[in-house]
Image 1 (cartoon, helix red, strand yellow):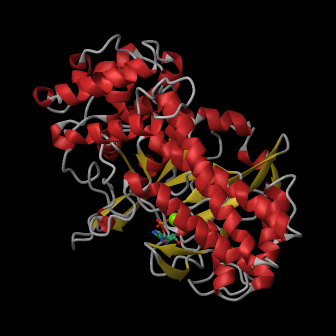
Image 2 (cartoon, rainbow, N blue to C red):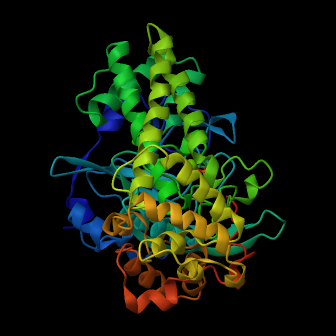
Length: 506
Ligand code: AMP
Ligand code: MG
């Protein structure tokens, strides 16, 4: 089936107040949740990457490259950009909105809602001072990573397609005065909705509680079945659900070693799904203090180990935003507490499976804390360490040597000590199956995306497709791929732009 023949709905724009003006230049749009705007046609759209899993869910074929490239809108679609605000790096930033994402519409497939959105498809009323476009490198990263996250079992937005536009886009990649043209691209991404914490914050910040209430009512009745916004009790139940999914998502990030990089409140989905793949990265040598985002290298707000606290801080901003709807706002503390208890139970369960413990027991916190310090003693590869732990038989620290960047520096004593404690905790019989399902063998290491990008920029998409295939089954052994991809970060990638250093330029 073609995209155009899906059953298109427009619940969001029918159910919330919008901008009376269609399209137009960047501006403030008070009182609105969205502005109607069409994608800007591109000169030469070519389909480069395609997710057959996403396409199967939607029941669509590859025939609509013109739609995916922003050149055509079919009958039932009602394209719009969403208005939202957000706290960026801890500060209220006012109106942001979809500056370079345009929703085509909501497709109803077997009763499920799928919002299809083109990212990089031109100027909207929310583009502020920028061009509304996206470059190939960041589009490849979003496409590969969001699909990899899906197969890893991490809640995420999805990607259907990546189309190159045939149009150069100028970017100063490290913001150091070296702008250059890069190939432009558009990713079609898919989610139940792209509502963010910032979607609610903007109305509250403007004192527009009527629009806030309409958006909350819309969100609950359309996306949170069985919830009721008409009382404090109902709102707390809804927010507790948001707390749970957000906490679960961040626990998953910790499980697989994902660092979002820009956890601003406009990049926090109300559904607790990973959203807005920008300067994200994957922990290779285990370092809770690592952030891939060079814009954050001084403040280190969005490091791997800080994500749980930032999640809580962001959630508190959502609670503040909806507080005007409460008869007794002190009820909101219950949801904040719920975030903490949810996070604790999700991380506990995560460690039980990562370490093959079968069930949690007193003393596990200490075992985990000792492990986390051990991993920092010398450079240790997170993915290889946990994967290897599921295969070793006995207590020989040398069996873990492959996980160390300098095998000669293996902390034999400390590692031996910890392995001994772990081995007796699991009675010499760890739950290896649970471990293999919690500790992926393959993740999208930073240098892997970079190799895919460099090839694609030379018109060769084979590496990207190979990685897409590999990461369809990240928990499988895949012996034929092992030598190429089950590897520590190569030396060339240690300080390379695009691998260890990323900016928001995209
Ligand atoms: P981000 O931190 O990438 O999620 O983006 C923050 C805000 O900047 C969002 O409102 C984006 O829509 C907007 N933005 C980012 N890049 C562009 C661009 N090239 N053109 C227009 N708006 C953009
Ligand atoms: Mg964003």
